[in-house]
Length: 256
Image (cartoon, rainbow, N blue to C red; front, side):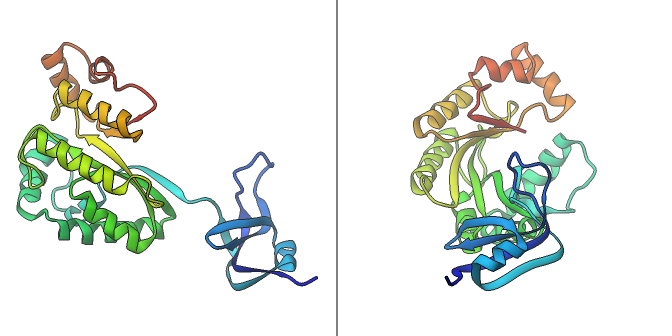
C-alpha cells in the first residue's frame, strides 16, 4: 500500500498537541493537506504513512498551535517610539490623538496592519483581537497575509478622522460587520473605546449590536488609576461596576 499524499509535514523535536496526553510528543510530526491537519504522531510513523510535497521544521524546533494576542491596535505600530514612557492620558491627548488626526487614513492603516501582522506571525501569533479605525483596510491586509483576526470597529463619543459623531461611528461599524461576518479569516466585532470616552448609552447600543449579530464586544477597562477616579466622579462607581450597570460584564465582552 502506497503512502498517502499530503501538502507538507511539519517536524519538531517537541510537538505540543494540547490534548490530555501527558507532555509533548518527542520527535513528532504533523501532516497537513488542504489547510487541515490530517494526522499527528511520532515523526517516524508520520513519514512512513505520508508523502509530502515538502517537509518543514526538524531538530531544535517545537510545533504547537498558534499563539493568540487578545488585545491589539495593530496599525499603531507606525506610532512606535513616538511618545514613550508617559502617563496614558498625556500619551493619548497630547500625542496619539493629534497624530491620528493628522496621519490616519485607510492606506496608513492597511500598510501598518500588514507590518504588524508580519511581526506577529514571526513571533508565532496566528490570531489577534484588534480595536481600531478603518478596519476594512485592516481586513484587506489580513486577507493578503493569511493571518486570522477579530477586528473591532472603534466607537467614540467625539469626532476623529473616521467619523464626525457617535451615530456615524455606529453606521460605519454596522456596514463593516455586515461586509465581513462569516469570513473564514476575519471575525468582526464592535469596540466602544473606554468608559472615559463612551457614554452609558453608547455602551448599551454597542452591546445590542453585539447581541444582534452574535459578535464580540471589545473595550478598555481600568487601564489607569486616573480612569478609576474619573469614573467614580462621573458615575459614583468603579469602572467595573459602571460597565456592569450597562450590562457589559458577560461572556461576549473582552475588556483590556
